[in-house]
Image (cartoon, rainbow, N blue to C red; front, side, top):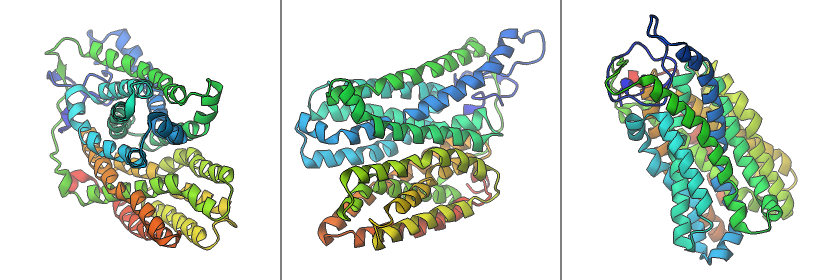
Length: 439
């Protein structure tokens, strides 16, 4: 995708020349002269604020479809008569969908514009979450879940692009705000789904479907942004900027590969933590309720740190030291889980929560490793799609090792072992380089 495909996405758009293939989701910069309307100037002031609201609302909706299901998985299995194999498949479906649909995001953004694609993604989440409890049967439930996950996947990829385009000088702070909202949405869905289900009558169907309301709210600001952009663009044949293209062959960039592997390994660690950490504590003698609280603490650590870490990373020329620090926290947490899982449970939960903040660091580096919005959309799609593919075997392998070894020694050794290459590729991805200079 060339730079011109996203040239008018954000407020950095330049003078307009003839084009009919422009994304219809960013504001126009009012041009001097009699044609510039007062309305365009007013839009230039309030539209970025609306984009910020859209970013926050979108981020809040990128995980509840997954974590709300995890909270009610036993009820869903009983209600739909799912086998254990199918229920296990549900835990792998998100990563598969993120990889499969995320790779399509650049093509969709080129054709329709990132804002319009994000708007459609929020609508897909709304419909998928609303209908999946009621479609009847396991097949319909999986299909509707796939629709919601497709919306999440394309939005995952395009959020860094929107940030880079609208706020090029504030990538760190805006990524921090987005990451904090994402972590908050994850934690809220995990913590509130069960009590909300009870308050709404006890039906798991209602408990899952209620999260569609939040997704529906997220559609609204993006509708306004897309509508405003199309109104500013005028009829087909109006003029738009066409900056010179810097060709990028993403697979030829060592930095892109380093980011993809870093993203995949941090996602592997996060999925293992979410899926297995409570069981590790329970097998060590911790009560089920306390084990759940420990997981909530781990997830909640991401809320403040996801806001602070990107701001810090954006001020550094080399983000490798942050990757090392987060990796060392992970290694310390795994060592604690091995040596004294129950005695130091709260400390290990905190350390794992810090280590899991490699996710907002990866997002920040995606926004910083390209000079253009077009480069960011390619890098984001590549790093996230390849990364989520890498993450798929990890949780399954941990479960297999646990089952066959009868304990947590080998699985924890695997988790700690994966943290070493994560640190190494994090240092490589954190170097002050741009993919345009490599590919």
